[in-house]
Amino acid sequence: MSEGQAAAPELSSVQLMEQFRAIAHASHNRTNARMSAAGLSLPRFRVLQALASGGQLRMNELSAALGVVPRTVTTIIDALENDRMVARLADPADRRATLLEITQDGLGQLTRFRAMHDSAAAELFDVLTDAERHQLAKLLRRLQAAADAHPGGSSPARPERADLQPPGR
Image (tube, rainbow, N blue to C red):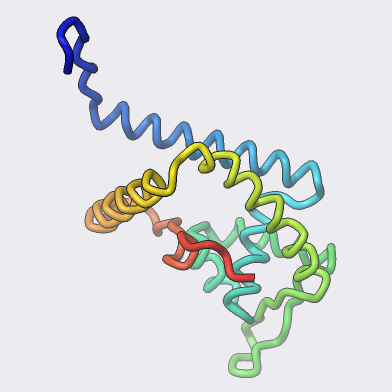
């Protein structure tokens, strides 16, 4: 540090956590608003994405994969089924259970909205250099490991490792 420059104030863990939360919240809201205006909310997009990558799933499996309560998934599935993007199928292994499957219409919508989702992510992260992106990914993995090591919250709503890589199309 050169003479005459004041030292940067030390950041508390609470300040960092609040900044992290604010960035995540703003990014989610901006992406959701953009996608909703075009006809598909971010939560519905996430459900379609999970079904496209996971194949046929039971409601509880989908709920666990997304890290949300089953009632939330039921509401989203009802709307997606009404829009013919998801189908409910009888589970041949358990006649009391229902499997969920993305339809061709759902796959078409997912493809269309992936570009919008990717664009929103690019707007946020394109301000970083490649080296900064790698450093951020490394730091996020460390934070995720620390969060996973301290149970006490609800089920983790974290992205799968593949979600940290560019999406395969």
